[in-house]
Image 1 (cartoon, rainbow, N blue to C red):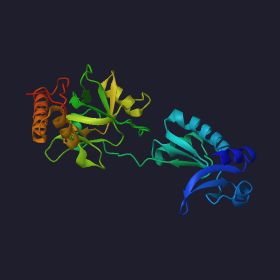
Image 2: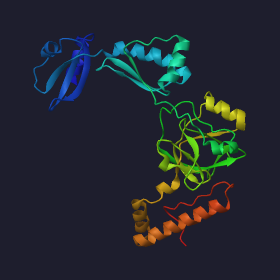
Image 3: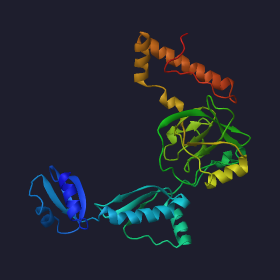
Image 4: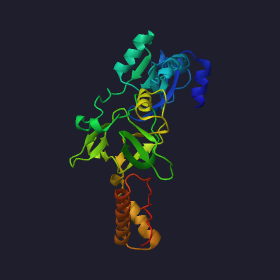
Length: 307
């Protein structure tokens, strides 16, 4: 690190930076735009260090990053990006597919420089609902952008369909907020004829409308989204909860470590802990069947009430 600082100070226009490479053993690679071997030899002949040609100093790339971030952000096109000095580029992770980007770029007259590399999302799923179900639903509200960041808290609730609009029931949350799904979500029928929400790339993880679901979050809702505008027009005002593509909570029920923890806390056998958790799930399912339109009241089945 001391050598890195020394070179950066004495040769700022040619020096790119230092990183670890494996060729075949791990070594520190000092990278220069040109004449790397000769330049490094001016400072050290230590065999643990090696010289690499190529790249562009970060200070030259940062203005490209700043300019294009400012251009993309008002259109909600970019989710993240980085200055990659060792490769000599600025890269952005785009929230849209290439075709959607091209429409905006042409309209704005953009001509990105060669050092700007864009990574696009796959094309969006064009099918939002099984035609057999369309008459029951006013709208399948979907985001018009892929999320840049997905928080990993497990959020649960029940997505229901009321008067043609999807809403969510959650514990300790008043009312029935409207729902917006991921841009690729679709409403379909499962093999038993139940209405489900699913990702077409993972149809085995579909969640039935009305059942308890789990999704990663919290996910923000942007009022600029075309999906939000459509939802307001078709289903009215009020809070909106973004649920992405939720999964059935049943998929998360059987967890061996949770059974072990319950057995240890209560000083009971694993079989007794397993029986207590299964009984809790049965009570939970019965509550949801008997009160399908009421706010959800959940029992913590990792620590169920003693019966």
